[in-house]
Amino acid sequence: MTLTVLKWILRGLTGLTVVLLCTNWAAIGIGLMAIDILVVVAYEMKKTACDRRQMHHLPEVHRM
Image 1 (cartoon, rainbow, N blue to C red):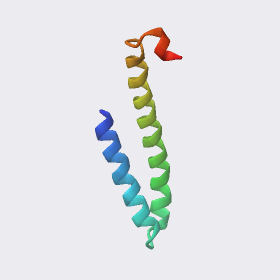
Image 2: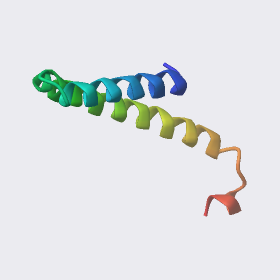
Image 3: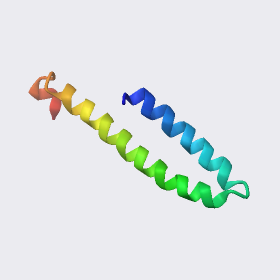
Image 4: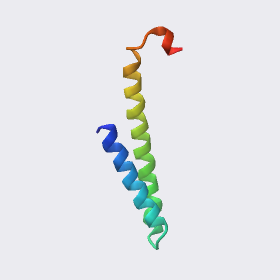
């Protein structure tokens, strides 16, 4: 998945979680928080992998 897709999935899940936590469906909202955490981890891993690939194009002086 691309970063844009992961970012919008994360935003949608977070919004849905907040809505569920404010209603009588809080138990489902708590379960969605676990899924949100997994999506955040996947998003951050994908984001940092992209950053590492781009680092080899920079001169050594700029890496410090």
